[in-house]
Each structure stands twice: as C-alpha cells, then as structure tokens.
Image (cartoon, rainbow, N blue to C red; front, side, top):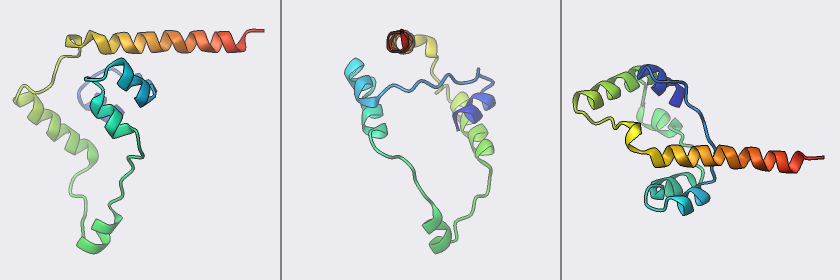
Length: 109
C-alpha cells in the first residue's frame, strides 16, 4: 500500500520503521495519539460481506484510486511537506541508533 502511494507520488521507497505504538505515544503523545489508538489493535478489515450481501465490486484498481486521491490533494494544496516535521525524522534516527546498539550489545561475545 505505502509503496504504491510512494510510486504514484514519485517519492523514494519507504523506509519502514517498526516502533511500538505505546512507546511512540510516550515519545510524542500529541503527535502520535492517532497512532496509539489506530495501531494498538488488529486493523485488518474484510469486505467479503459487502461483496456477498450487497454485490460490492471494485470499479477501479487501488493504484488508480491512489492517483485520483493524490491528484485531488495536490489540486487543493493538502499534501504537507515532511520537512516541516523534523521531530519525526529525529525519532526514526534515534530508533535506528538504539536498535543497532541493542543488537550489538546482545550479540557481543
């Protein structure tokens, strides 16, 4: 999903970082509030009932939907510049550093 969005936006390949949502909420309580609530539990949804009970069918591909959404957001100046949020980059850098440090510490002989 995120790779498709990046490709459509002509953005670099995403660097997926797995930070526990409870830790992220402690690091950035305001900024990560939605993350804590959203990713704390399973977020897998199934539309099989809509297909069987309502006759739901896809009319466009996911990528086409992303293209339409990105076009709309660009036309309405609704895509934020990530450079306006250096705090997020700092969290990712620090997490990578701590992860490397922990691996080195645990695997020392």
